[in-house]
Length: 351
Image 1 (cartoon, rainbow, N blue to C red):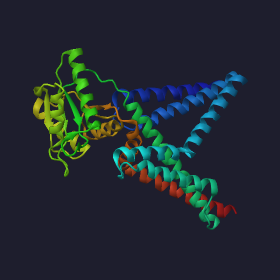
Image 2: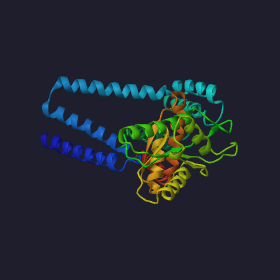
Image 3: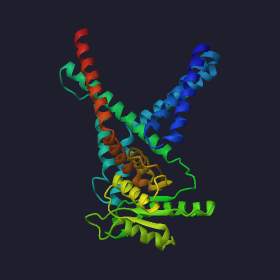
Image 4: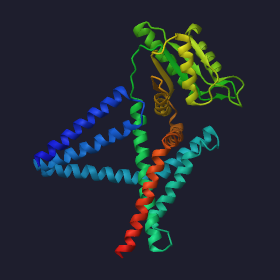
């Protein structure tokens, strides 16, 4: 018993060291969420081993009750999550209009209802082997989606727990589109304000001037480039023009980072400038992963996002990250298909 406890303790220490290494040196990755959840699972196993060793019935009962409560809460939350999703869709439609991007929670809510119907009422009318295959495939598929969603959300939350040093040379503020083709909206305004806040805090703490780079090109429905409108907004907030630069060619986050990095190198004449980028909190993880893939040494800080907007935004980010890692997910889906097929075939053999 004691050897098992010591083994689990050793595994826990190793996992904590790996997690700390990623948080300090390799933040720009979604692996952080997986490492945190592995640490939590290992801690639970370690706690279980400790209870076995000390053989305290009361503590074991408390642990079992808490574990069952978590299972009930999570399970109930998943089954009835469509209620929250429909409510959020109503407010999103009311404030953002009826577009696809504001309807993602509605689509997901309908999906939750269909899954509930499938598992609670088993409506499939097909030969038993086909039923077994469909049930196994959907069960594993849904479990995999829930697992990746959970790990992505944990990665997003933890990524935002970042407190950068006030030694930056450049602050890249990423664009998100203009209102009526020329005005800075609430989401974009929050990003700019966050960048200005960091600029002033660094100036106050270290007296070091950073340059704000406002990054965003001109969309087909926009009258001026986003970067130009963002700079005007910042100047109106009292930022000195000498501490501002504009990147006005990009049309997505990848180009925001690439083109801004070119401006930094041209402006500084160096390859080792210290950079931070600013975006909304739901977008920092994907921005960081892109920066890492592009070899740009920048970590993101997140601006606040209205709560009603977050669920749709998080779904979009999850889908974007899913596509970003599509090869891995395709491999996992193929594995799920094969496992479901083998399980269905084995049921025929056993029968």
